[in-house]
Image (cartoon, rainbow over all chains, first blue to last red; front, side, top):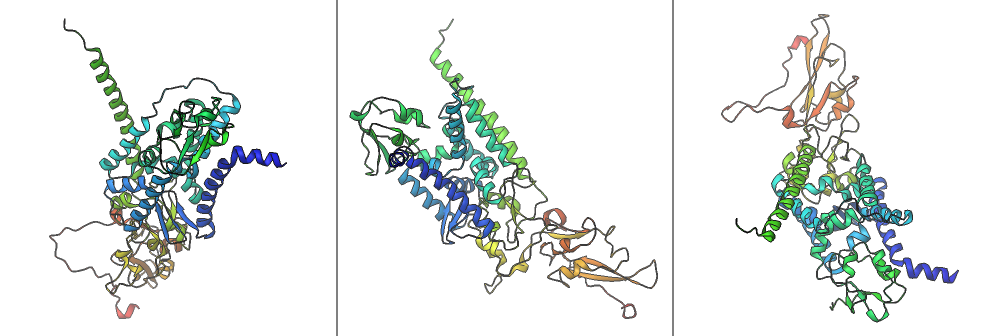
Length: 272
Length: 238
């Protein structure tokens, strides 16, 4: 029993925390609208903690600014808080907060359970997301509308849980099927402009995964678990931290590593 | 024949590939967004900026919806005929009860619901300044305009006598009864929809429409006095 707990702790501690946070946030949003809870009101585009601390999606705010919206100060403060937080802890929104991660990780889990080893149905460049991000900004400026907010599956999921899903489930199902059958890690790893945005803003993050080459047995478990495996280029090659800002700091690699070769590094300093 | 610079040719071709993909994708995206944003008959919460401004300012967080004590406000979901994620209400289902503290507008973090437009000269909140829409009567089907004694919409109006009143007329069919015809004054109507909610007909014969849809504009060059809808009732007909 004790060793079983030990095993779960060693291999799933971050995963359990992430799922608890992702689902907890959705529960708080739902409870706020349905039962009047006041701990966290709103949705992932903007919310308020205890009716006091504002939070806002910095990319949504950027789109509104480009669209020419005369924004009040509160939402700007909220966006700044979120921007600074993720600048410090990295692109953790994607793996610790975003509800779409629940769906795409489910697709990845299903892929592994079903033993899919087919080559992708189409090739997508991982840099496509930066093109999508540029399109978001340009189209918001051109149409005077926050264009990603009209199609965002993140918004559809969080808003849907809190305020009513409508046909939004179809968009989420489409992403699940796309990730499952068309391109592995298709949406989060290739398309999502919010992930691209947080990759750009977390270049100087203070939380990174650290690798110790001497403990590494080159088993490949970390590569298999990682949703952005190209960030693990240093594994097996040299000591150092994962410096590619496309790392979502999900820490799955740290959990699955049985060789004490990967760690969470809070020191903030980064080495080669 | 000139030698072909393969690298250059390849680079130009790759660039054109990217530009084409971006342009085609962008056109579809822009088309969907533009289409989704065209919802002319949506009623917005109190203090909402003009629709174009509103769509460029609302972040779709639902804080107004969460703070609405009557569950009047909803957020548009995919499949509703509403720009996705933006707040709206349907008065036939639940009207706006015009809370004096205007919690929806007070909760708005972006100013898409502009509390300043709902504040009087002394700095007090004044919800009667809301202009969510304007009530329009279908006189062909309103049972009061056809001689039945109904004033449900007039009684439901929080600004009875200003925003809506009864125009009493002789009923020409019977020759001896009054007709209680409801008349709306758009200068005072907030568009809360309490009238539409109260209307007793099968489909409401008084409905709230967005002001841009229902109201015209005379033009700046007319210098006319403000309309006075107060009915003139001869003494002997009261």
